[in-house]
Image (tube, rainbow, N blue to C red; front, top):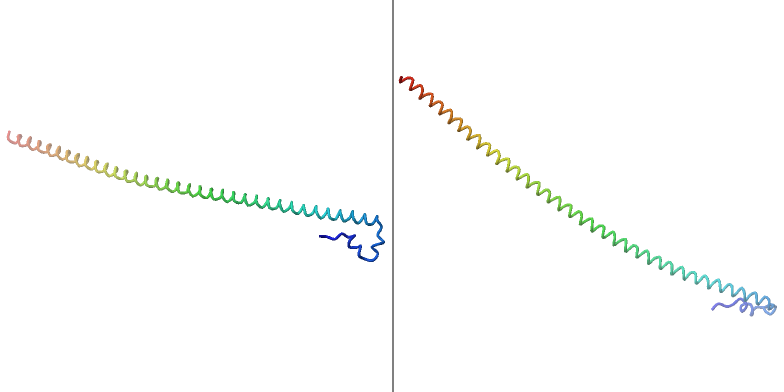
Amino acid sequence: PMKSPSSLCSGSPGASSLSSEDAERIQKLERRILGAAQFQVERDVLEEFRYRDYEQKLQEEERTWQAQVSTVRKLRAEAAQRRKAQHEEVEDRRKQMQGHLAHAREAKVSHQDASSARRVCELKEAQRRRLEERRNEQLERSKE
């Protein structure tokens, strides 16, 4: 406990020379000092509470922020996986289509080759018939 200034002075020489007016002033000063000290203590306590509250809010905001960052990272990773899967699917389809197109071209060429071969055979056959007809005509002319 704090000793009041008047109690400190009462044991010193000349303490009896304090008038009641001075003693009253000293008591008023003591009360003012004690009030100011108590006010400062209360202010410090309130400040500490505000600081703790502020710290808790900051920590809560940081946790929220970390959770949001984590969610965003997770969503980005999922989106990247989806894009990769779609890209692979498109690439597979492209390769498949190229295979189908190549097969179709080969079939078309084969068909054209077969058609050309038939046409050549038909033309050769027609030419052979014409030659045969000419020979026959020449043979009949020579008989006559």
